[in-house]
Amino acid sequence: MVDAPQQPERISDAEHAVMEALWDRAPLTASEVCDKVCDERSWSLATVKTLLSRLVAKRAVVTEPDGKRFLYSPGIARESYVGTESRRLVDRLFGGRAAPLFAHLAQADALTEDDIAEIEALLKELKS
Amino acid sequence: MVDAPQQPERISDAEHAVMEALWDRAPLTASEVCDKVCDERSWSLATVKTLLSRLVAKRAVVTEPDGKRFLYSPGIARESYVGTESRRLVDRLFGGRAAPLFAHLAQADALTEDDIAEIEALLKELKS
DNA sequence: CGTAGTCGTTTACACATGTAAACAGCTAAG
DNA sequence: CTTAGCTGTTTACATGTGTAAACGACTACG
Image (cartoon, rainbow over all chains, first blue to last red):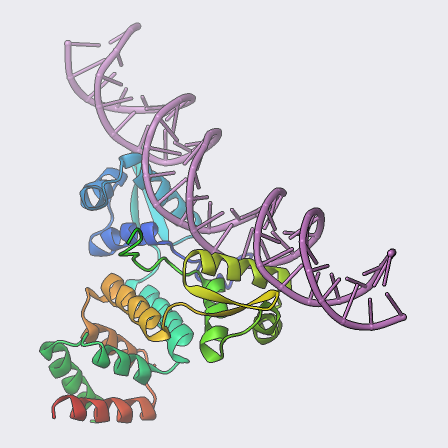
């Protein structure tokens, strides 16, 4: 084990868009990834290739050879990424407590009727 | 009005630490800010001065002359910053909906008993 | 009156990020 | 066989960020 712990390296905004494409469907080739993201963000294929390389370097994306080219797949679960990022925000802005975040969203009218209903349901489940 | 809309410029991680100091108490001099943050992050006064300048440039911090030096105060409300950042996260990771964020926190055991109780109370209030 | 300390400002420099062109290798079509 | 078209890799360059030293102005102590 030369490489053991490997705390998750930070994924940038642009890189994140690429990850989303791969989380949605994988494995994909570089140009397939581009097809999925390039119109939205108006990137060139070159840009996507750079981002993919960087993600591979960070081990956030893994490759598998397919003939002469590569197929790219996520190297980390979306769950895990979302977890780290949410935790980061809650720690930085709400002292690590989730309730103040919730309070803030409520106060900012960021909660729809549906949100409220769903959260209520989840709460009920948590107490069972 | 030369300058009207001014969408909030991004505040970096290090800058954020300085903002927290000023949100906690203001106005402060540069070295007072340093006193509050420099041990935690082991920064030099020089670093704090740089961060303050950048924040002033971004208009996230405002200055008021006090004799020969400046007193620094937040130029944006913490509320507002927290709002933007929370929104960013919810948009990027949860499709703009708050319920999935909540679901995620619940599933990741990031909710304490107290959180749950508080959220329940808030929900009750929302429905009144 | 010099000089040590304290301000804010300028300059510095390495690394991250956004964005992409250039290049080298290979394959498929003429 | 040449060449157009894909690959992935290398190189590029501007801007942002973390971190700080250097500098110039001023004040207060000796």
